[in-house]
Image 1 (tube, rainbow, N blue to C red):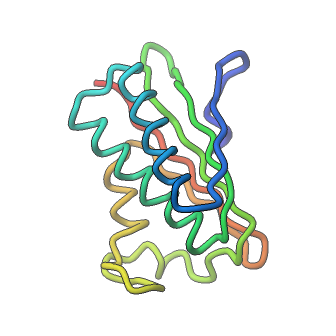
Image 2: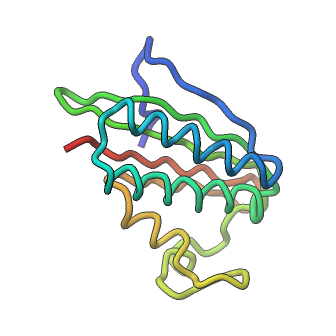
Image 3: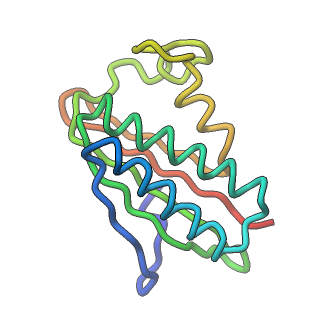
Length: 140
């Protein structure tokens, strides 16, 4: 997936460097989801996915950024968020996307669960160079 924004579409950029930044990400995503008129259920799904990815960016990636904004594709409108870090990367993406697998002490539903909560999910990673995850939720 390439960058989801067309020329001229406004995006917001936030750092993810401390726990309080995860809260800021959730607030930004909630505002964008409401502006794009996502249903309450879809707002909740997208906020949950963004919160998990922000936490992963902080904990596993050592911090990074999130860029988010409204997107359009034809008559469809939605919200996109791109989480990027320059951390260690993910050595085994297939394993990391497996339900129940965890590299930490969590439930192991992070990446695979996040993928199920959104309409579009793209993960690009390189060991030693970092990870970028792009998610999109379309209004129905």
